Image: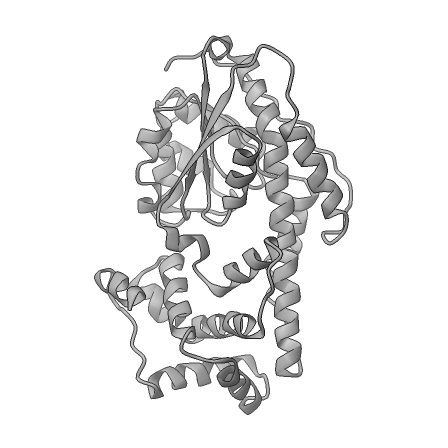
Length: 351
């Protein structure tokens, strides 16, 4: 679909300090009002196709090439983007930069994505689709917060119960951060699409502008909010199991949807973290895919109770490496097995 190309200027980023825990209700209301407001102007309606998938392997981009060629605008997920990264995506779509060159130029982008990024560029190559970005841009306070806080692990406390409380507090902060990030995407979606339409007059003549929004499996809330606003929307998943591949994700989603988080679920977060410290290198040697590894660790953790985890914590006085070793030993003592080849994974997870 040949379209006129024009330089796209992203919305100005307002830089103001905020407390990640404060003002969320007011922020959400503002986003909802802006997104649901009927904009004036000769813009055709939009239809948003959500493609939810992890961003680890080339397989996670299966079907992306075909989907891109069915739409007018492609919006990938990329936190910390700037005009250079947006321009690179567009140059690949326009056939001005090939995927191999794009891989070299995208080194240092947040998320990395490796095999997935390469497959994404291949899918985009010479598609002539317009590309937009609505994720948190570089320099935004949320991007700074992620860099400073989000990659910190929860603190192991002096007691088991203190550790459980720390896990819940840490996961709640992550859930609140993700809500703020998703609200930013929702706030930017409509005006960003309209800017693309303004820059490409041929799109104004369409009965409907088709948008493909590619997001990680966790971000289903964006779909629900867009659909609830009345915008035509549909979604597909690479694999529904990847929506929540570990207990950390389940805890975050529970907080995001105002559900109670039990001590046992928080203890599973601790188990999976320690399990990966004990067995992670072995699992990654076999699979190399953090989604599969997380699913296996979660399956192993489901066979340990809250009391089991409390006993392991108390016996090792909360020492992280000793607890990791104790979990590895407990798995061996219980003769718990796990897959070592991709062919075994599906049967193992279904058992």
